[in-house]
Amino acid sequence: MQMRPHQSAPPGRNFSRRFCAHIIASICFEHLKSSTDDSLIAAQLFAESYIYALGGKTKKRCGMGKLTRQERTKRQLKSAVEQISSVIARLYEAISMQRGVDCAPHAVLGRALLRDFNFESKLVAGYAAWAVGTASNAIISHVRQERGYSLPGTEAFNYHAWLQCEGHIIDLTTYQLRRKAQLLDAADGGYTEVTWSPSYLMLPPNRTLSYEKVRRSKLAGVVYYEPQPELLRRLESTATLALEPEELWCARRLLADPSLNITGPNTIIDAGISASAKLEMLRQFAEALGPENVPASIQRVAHHLREHPVPLTTQENAELDQLLASASVSQ
Image (cartoon, rainbow, N blue to C red; front, side, top):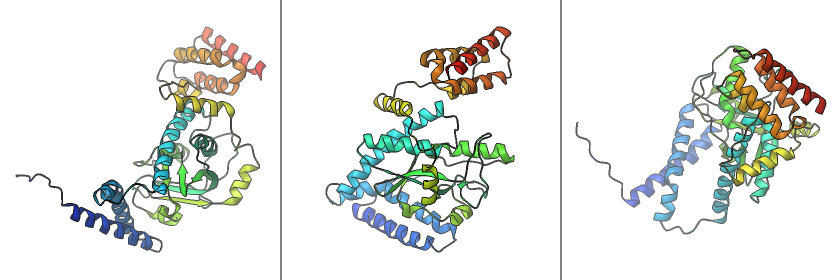
């Protein structure tokens, strides 16, 4: 079979296609509000992706002038969110003791870092859901209708936290969607195939769907966010929204120098090395920070080492006991 080389359409035809795509996207989304047809969701997503991929060329080619202030602000915000989301993911993957269910700390730290970029944001609590795959069970949700999952030994309730900034929803936790699915699968014995787990989300509220539409969707990447002021008030009555100064300091250092390495208890636990090597990492970790600063971290890693498939030697267990004793005395 002889293939013809691809030829670009004349500028006028390109503009017409983009203009039609814009109309299709607008019409489709209006129908989505009352329709249950997944094909309309697909059409809308395709049309918007087409505009996004080619929209910049349209403006330049048609001589529409410089970016508006709103467009410039959106680009600056997107750049800031990309940097912040990368730093927060690195930090909490290393240190968080509640990975997968720590949306509030993500939002609180994200709000503080956005201020460093001269963006004021609002913390929002409410319900949310994401279609992470195409299977009927590939839905992860924090909603009142569904029974929630919480880490053993913790008190929790169904909610999700995110930020609102410059008319956009900003969710810095979506990189954890695969981990959330693993936690749920471990709890109920099921299996969730995750094909969509973006590093972050930044989208206008009118690009979200109702929970029922997301739950019935056969497409990955459709989302639901619904603010609930009473949930935010409930969070504000606890210490959940307290900003940890040490975390802010670490995040700022990572923003200033992304080449820096960060080590935390999860780094040690996740490392594919022997228990003896992990004990050495823990010893160095405690010496660097001082046992008084990491008692909970030391206890968590110690529990992991006690259950390691290759047990510690008698001497190593004695060293671990000594570390634990130092941490306990320092508390």
